[in-house]
Length: 374
Length: 90
Image 1: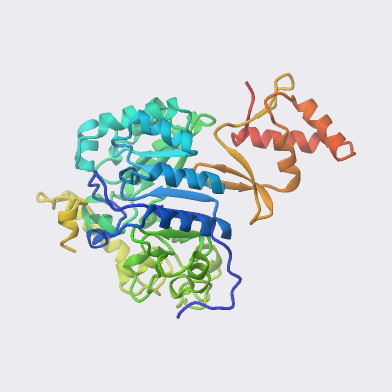
Image 2 (image 1 turned 90 degrees about the vertical axis):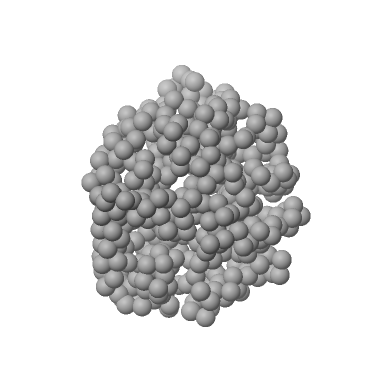
């Protein structure tokens, strides 16, 4: 085990319940694992209630209901109701696609606090193309209904090379839909986005232009809409403080009950991530190999180990280090102090060359047929 | 942002104020976020009921804690709260 046992372990605050991997959309940047189709078992309603109860008892207060598409779970209202009784702040993280007015009302009655809707682009043709399903007009209608029922609404748009030129229109769309928050999430290159990176990663110039447009709008709309900007870490000199530190704050439960310190941790080798069918949340959080693996600083290599910023960014993202360098203990290659920063430069160059070439590879869409190839 | 002294102050319906036993403190909850409050901030926000004006809130806190002279601190905190969207005025 890499982690130290001598740390003060802080309780979880954030529980991300990935209720299912089923989804009617096929976004080519989905953060679900590539082989999600091989994990088709789903926890029962009673299992989820037990997980929520146990995590709440430890101190979890923010609850993300996600997937896949959580709306495909017909017991969603029952799970929300249970969360409400426990005192969670519940966030439904959905594509919005197919969310009926009756269900919006039923979820409100059950005690749902907030709905986050994702839209893929500001134009119908591009949004439907990226989603792999005709869904744009339906999502816009759903967004209006979410506001009609008094929910705070977050509109989430994942940004990449196919839609980054639409930044001004995306901002206008968010304003028109009455979003309280707009999350501009620059694609993080894990899962399906990693496979499609050459087609998705914008150039530095594209990022700079889009960010300037978003920044100007942010000032204009202050007091009416808040904008969360998820930074494109490939163009940063320091890595993100992933998960606010491993095993300090975030607990993800995958559809089949596997407990993960971050939603990508399934990709890391040798963690032996525990299942909620075998252990309590307290046992998992406190004692499991997986949750102790990267706790603290003992596991670090140089230059992280002696770095005076290690308590700020925790060496960056373990999944990114592993995906790019093959070594999950390595400094996140995004860091300019990393001896492997060239891996990021190579990725940027490769994406740029792909954009300039005549025979761009088609996007690999996230669906069960493609998942079975991995 | 300045508080209008003539209008009542209410806690934002887009946020939730809640006691957290595990943290031994009140917190503000909102989409995907949480603000941890100290005791005095929480006491101020609990009085933002959509009926009281800032003057009445100050009066109530002075009475509750048998003290005076909190005007400046309370006003300063309420301005921050308004800026963050935790409270609103009609």
